[in-house]
Image 1 (cartoon, rainbow, N blue to C red):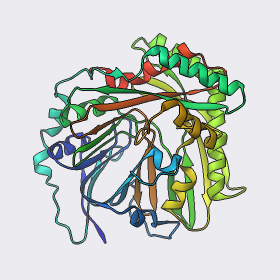
Image 2 (cartoon, rainbow, N blue to C red):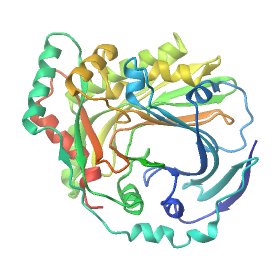
Image 3 (tube, one colour):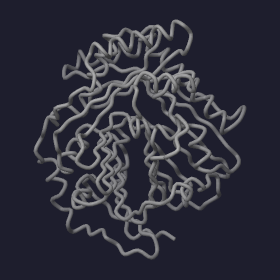
Image 4 (cartoon, rainbow, N blue to C red):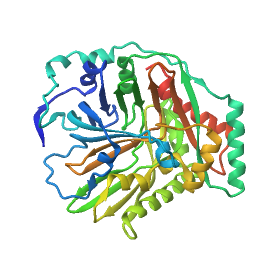
Length: 414
């Protein structure tokens, strides 16, 4: 059983609260564009089966409206659901202690499961936030595994396959590596300045995931015996500019782009179909076909699809029917996953996978798609992947420029 240990009104955000744990294992979720920030302090890795059997759509009495307190955090590999693999690489954790900050209400909540001693001590955090703001700023030297010519030819190959009718849209990635080393403090600074609403930093043993993602994969919340699902697929990108006039023109161009709206509508239709597999006929609707939202480095077109389910379903069944996400595969999904494997010639691993937070005792779930994400494992080079959706109206040079705009989130100095 979990307990709300403390509830405190604060004026600062949570970034500073992660700093004292920066040399050990910790999980931090949020960014300057998110309403909530979550710091997980005590957790342990658990078997996949233990997490995947957890049920959605159980009636509960909810005593607070927060996205997470304690429960399951999942790090989902794209490859686990895109093909039949013998060895699964997704990781699942049970969280026993967390600190959650609601920026709107300026209130911090501290949660602790029975049988665990609190490790959170607010006295040591007074200067941590300022330390993150004042941390050194570092440019990262990213090197592509393949050159521009290879990318252009690959996009032209994809366009030929679209014309031949194999698929309608394919999300194609370009991979990068860097030998640079950043401290956790430097990564927290970058997250503070650049993370989207679904920013995340997971540090566990010798592995790190640093995600600047703006994209919700799907959420689920039980109310009055009905499980309400929602997804916010992203398609369509235009760069941000320091000039207000240029920035507005870029935003207007995206809002009026037939190519980008068509790209988004394909994925909306795909996600409607995926939700149909869970919710059944008459229970899925398009809440928003596409609106422009602005983030630190780019503008995006984002849609909203919702669904309702009046019976129980396990976390495992949800993931089986929804993963990988439509926005980072394409349409039709099964065929493009085969084509992606042929074209990229490597596992995606956590790139385009998901982070999932499931507070099963409060029957609330939220998840992101791991776009704009850095993966660091041991002493190996850190890696980054960036992609775009290729459709019949795509131009290779324009897609290459779009990748450069998306890369700014991890390549700029802040």
